[in-house]
Image 1 (cartoon, helix red, strand yellow):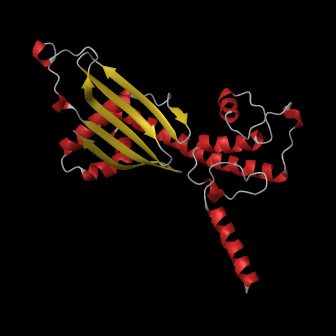
Image 2 (tube, helix red, strand yellow):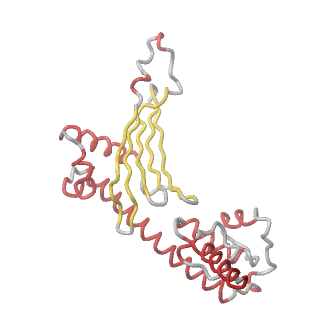
Image 3 (cartoon, one colour):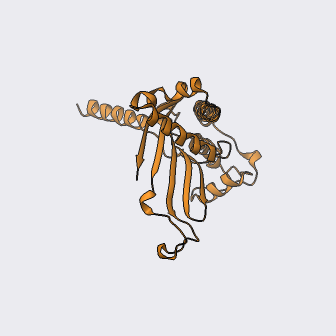
Length: 250
């Protein structure tokens, strides 16, 4: 009976281990990963895990971001030469598995960016067919045509401020943000990528200008009551972006 219990316990424990996503690659030298253990990892996180396999063997990185990242790990001990490093069959297998997941995430990101660029271009040229392709759900949600057109105009204004070719990617997020100070107030426009969503945010008039004077000196007519935020959220899928919801505050 004890033997059966012990066997069941080992089985359940191993199942639990393989069902959890990993936070590092400490098991990658002796355990072949399952794709489910990599679910939810961004392209950058997957690349870190893949490079960690070599780093744990002492690989010396020429890329500054990896060199600096692994140099701060207490387990990292650089080898005298990369030529002396040999990866096991299990380690090479895990590298291939991670690369496969990286390819999936890269395709998802590339499609999302292409879709966003197509939508931005359509907004600029008022291409209703393409706009409706991405925002038909929004159109159904807004009762009046005037209300819908106002939101489209705001989204167009936000896209015009955002450079989709200059997004910075770090770990599980991607960000491009710009603030504009016109001497009276400050506005902010940003696009924020998560693992499975992308949010376009506009904080039009959210703070006083750096050179803002006092209300009573007659220099500015800025009023905090004018502050507001507007955002649009899209889901990221393997087939591209899908509009999810919008919101406003202020």
